[in-house]
Each structure stands twice: as C-alpha cells, then as structure tokens.
Image 1 (cartoon, helix red, strand yellow):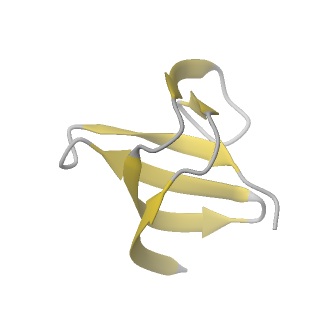
Image 2: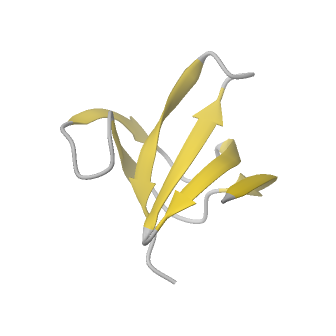
Image 3: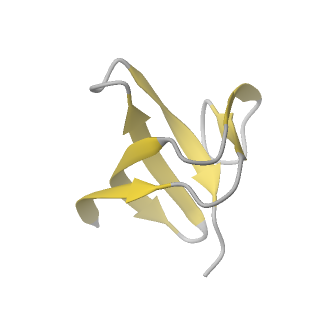
Length: 60
C-alpha cells in the first residue's frame, strides 16, 4: 500500500534499515519526513529530499 504523504515527527524515533532490522539512524522531534509505504506497524520513510531512507515503528 503506497502512502506518499508528509509528516512532522512528534517524538524522536530510531530508524531501521529494514522493518525489524538493525538500527541505522535516529530522528529527533520536529523532523519532516515523507511516508512511502506501510507494513503493519512499520512505516517506510524518506527525509532530506529522499537522500536518507529507512523504517520506523509507529503503532496506531
């Protein structure tokens, strides 16, 4: 399911290379990200104009 919408993070998140994979980065509160794909509670995101990408766990 493709999402393609923008979001400003309300809290800090650990960014993973793959859903349930190893942590590769951290994003602080207030960073604008673009949502690309959703897989269960995991959301694939891109930030910095698509230069950086990864997965965050965001249960809803």
